Length: 300
Image 1 (cartoon, rainbow, N blue to C red):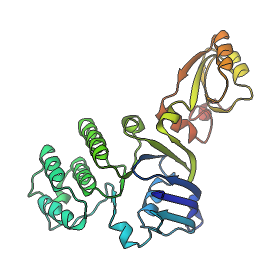
Image 2 (cartoon, one colour; image 1 turned 90 degrees about the vertical axis):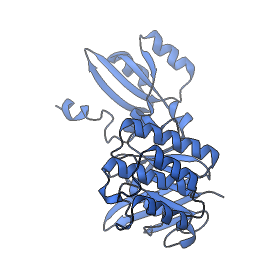
Image 3 (cartoon, rainbow, N blue to C red; image 1 turned 135 degrees about the vertical axis):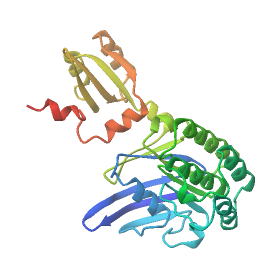
Image 4 (tube, one colour; image 1 turned 180 degrees about the vertical axis):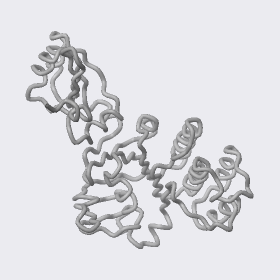
């Protein structure tokens, strides 16, 4: 049984398609990165999975059930983002106690240790915390709940680099000890690709790519060299991105689906081959133009 199943799902806001005929499945007990540019539909997708929104058409299943207004699903799912709202009259210690009563798999020891590690004041109120500390406290709730579906939507907003690293380590260690289905939306793909198993890349409400992180790292190859040699080599290829480097040099990214002999010939033409950074690749795949921002300045 899949943890999450989308079949031809469309979500409309008036005449705007936030999600456009989405089809994908996510297996249970995996960590999937939901990646895309601002406005791509990531949050709408995640809130649809969480049961916050009904779909306009198509079918969503979370553990074979429609998640919308589903108490059984909501009891086994947590949605963590920087807009989490808690009762303003409860201090942080009381919020942890209340969460323990709400989530059946709550790990009291983990919550206490993380709370102490990040040096929270038990008497402090959530709405008095800084943005980064709010995100850190929300992360403690998300991890300690041990929900079967755990959704982190841009959870590191305001966190400094050291705390983000601790968060990623804590998430991975707890996931290994207690596997569950984790969805992680972030703009910082290079920071989190070591903890991800799969990438779901969203572009304009559609699935641009759904691959394992290992397959994504070998998805494309970068070519750098004389413009004429690059154009000759890439003619007829599936080109993802092209950048004019000046002085008759070009950088091109193509899908790595061609035989080894192709790359040997490219090297003979003086072309330098290189791996493509996963974050850069996602940027290229979601760009409106193959030259990115350069197309704005290169037009006649």
